[in-house]
Length: 221
Length: 216
Image 1 (cartoon, rainbow over the protein chains, first blue to last red):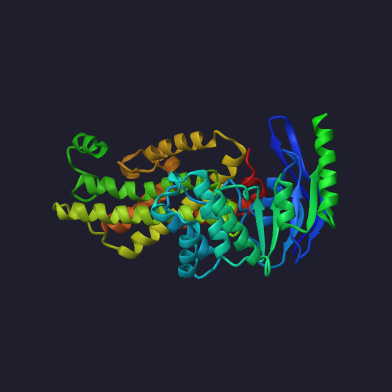
Image 2: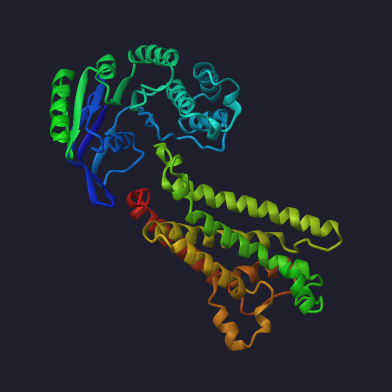
């Protein structure tokens, strides 16, 4: 479970201050999977980083109950000069997981082959995502935070990920950012919409998607 | 290279000891430790963006890790080079090991304090790292590396003695060469400045932590 209590977050851009959250209160309950929707630039990635704790809020408190994953996204948390194996060892170590078991799992699941021993710099975007997914799955988190990466990789790897997550969802929850209505319906049972500094949670996905589509139309106008 | 020039200029006769290289190098060790630590900590936050994405890793961790890395690297380099000097027949073994280590630790703490301050200042003013680079260059001439402050007129030495790194160099040397005991050396001054810098640096890092990792 993750609780937001009076959370404010904004950051500077060339065009002035950009507000992501303005005094947001929300509870991501345990036992539910949330899909977060929002138009481009609403601050969904920032929200995921806030939930993970990668970035501190300007004001307010974010409480996390249980182990929350690092944000699984394009940004990548890997050190480019280190090999896949070294990166995974480091992450397993800082999360206090069993290093041997994590490495074995990642090596098999990511199917990187010889690249597992190569610097992450030499990876393609897809290979990085595979490494990140495998690492995240190898460590037992209670909440997985995923930032628009479910569409990455080939069909085979996507199916494998979907299966692994379905199994993991029996014990853990997902908070997912995506544009893809299909992905949201596949994984989530609750929705949330981030717009104009407000985060609104919806009991079902249909309502959230409806609000999201209205937002897109407004945005286009 | 520089030490060769100085060696010729001073007719091969250093102010302390009998090898100019050793004399020069005993000044370089503490100076480098301070400069490397404080400078590399300046960049610790900006160059570790992806590492800081991992929630268990905070700004304090990356800063301290940089500091420790410089301590270990410089200590290893010093040991290897001194061993190298000894191997080619230049006597280079510190006469008071404890004192040498104490001097280095205090200089390192001063470097860490300055490093924390640098990291904070650099987050707010983009060009601070350039200014700091110039300051450390100035420090090279003010820290008694290729001379001893005793060679200076008293009034210049009194001004130079405000520089804590100079005390670090002289502390290191006075432990390295037992016959060298400068009367202006004030170990407690250096220690006090190091502790004060560290306190202010840590306090600022803690107070402004939320704004340090904000991408500008």
